[in-house]
Image 1: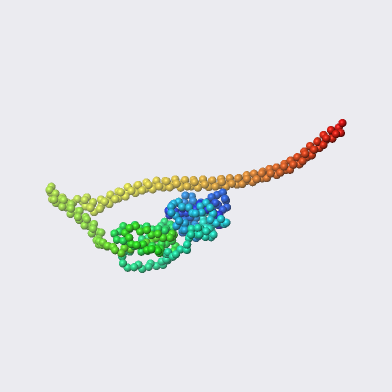
Image 2: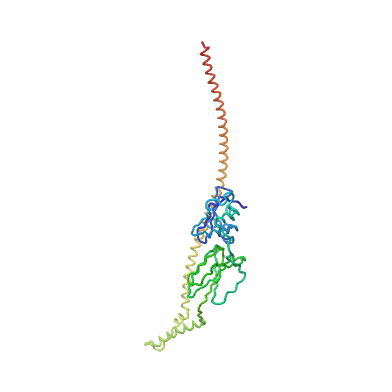
Length: 383
C-alpha cells in the first residue's frame, strides 16, 4: 500500500555512474528513518535487491525525469539536490512510497512537487535531439566504416562520450545511437547534435542532454585510409619457419671443422622447432597456474563462507534487535499509558486538595474573626 512522505531528509548521489540515495521519515512510524537507493531507470537489474543492507527501490516516471534533470546539475561528487533537508511542497507531500517489511520498494515524486522542481531548475521543453531508428539507414559512400557497440552493466544516465583515436588520418563520428533496454523491445534512438563533430586525429568529446542508455552504438568513418593485405596460409608460414631453422642448423653442421660427416639435425631440436617443446612448457605452466588458481579459489570460497556467515549473523542480530525493539516499544507504550494514568490521578488529587484548601482557609478566616469578636465581647462585658 502506498504512503505519502512530507519531504526527504536527504537526496543525493555520491559517485559517478552511481545510484541516488534517499532518506526520509517513515510516514507511519515517525521515530524510524528509511533509506533506499534509487537507480535512474526502472529497468535496472538491481531493483528489489539490497546493497550493503540498503534496498534498491523502483523509481516512478516522474522520479526518473527529476533524476535526469538533477544529473545535468552535477558538477562534482557528492551532490545533493536543492531541497536538502526541507520540503518541496510546503503545504502537501513531496513523495509517494511503497514499503514492504521495512524495505522501500517504490519511490515517486508527487505531481505538485514535480512541477515545483521543474520550475526551480528552470527546465525548458526540450528541442528534438534524437530520432527513432527502426532499421539501419544507408551510410554515404566513401571511406572505411566501423561500428562500435558499448554495453553498460545497467541502464544509467549518459551525457558525455570521449573518443581518443590512435590514427594517422582524421576519424569522423558519423552517428551515435543508444538503446534504453536490450532485454525487451525498445526502439533504437539516434542522438542529433546541434553542431556536427569534425573529423580529427585528436580526442573527440561529444556532449548532449542526459539520456538513459543500456547500450551505445558509435559509427565511425575514415575517409582517407590505407589497406595492407597479406594473404598466406598459416601452415605455409609454419613450414617456412621450420625449414629456415633446419637449414641454418644443417649449415652449422656442414661448416663445422670437426665434422665427421655423420652429424645431422638432432631429433630433440626438431621437436623444439615443431613446437612440441613449447607445448610441454606451456602445459607445465598451465598446470602450475591451475594449481595456483585452485588454491586461490579455495581461499576465495573460505572467505566467501566467512562473509556469508557474518552476513547471516548480522541479519540474525538485526532480527533479534527488531524483535527486542518491538517488545521494548510495547513495554514503553504500556508504561507510558500507566504513567499518564498516574499523572491524571495526581492531577485529580491535586485539584481536590486545592478545593479543600480553599474551604479550610475560608473556615479558618471565619474562626479567626469569631475569636476577635469574642475578645471584644469579653473586654466589654467580661467584668
